[in-house]
Length: 77
Image 1 (cartoon, helix red, strand yellow):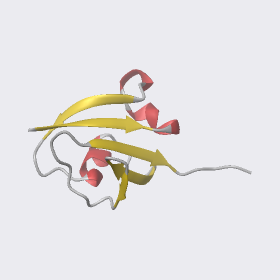
Image 2 (cartoon, rainbow, N blue to C red):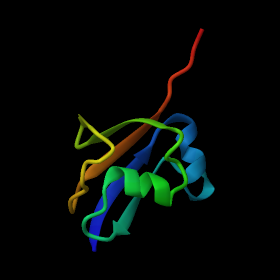
Image 3 (cartoon, one colour):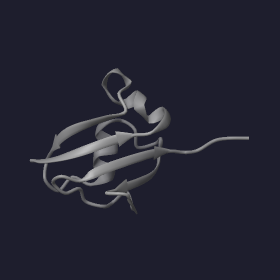
Image 4 (cartoon, rainbow, N blue to C red):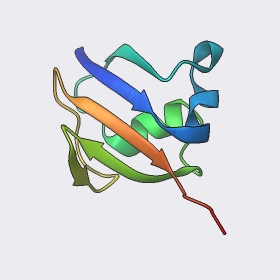
């Protein structure tokens, strides 16, 4: 198991318990960003992911102690 700090931005907070913005999670080693998004049922809503403030592809693996930020599609007018 590895531990990651997860930050859900904007309306993605609805995928975390009680709508919190962030939480620490223990996940299996080898988990990728896309795997975690799928586990949270948020894969269709995530537009950009970053690990330790660097934009990464959804296929990027997560490592112990990583800080993962997931961002929704931005809308405006």
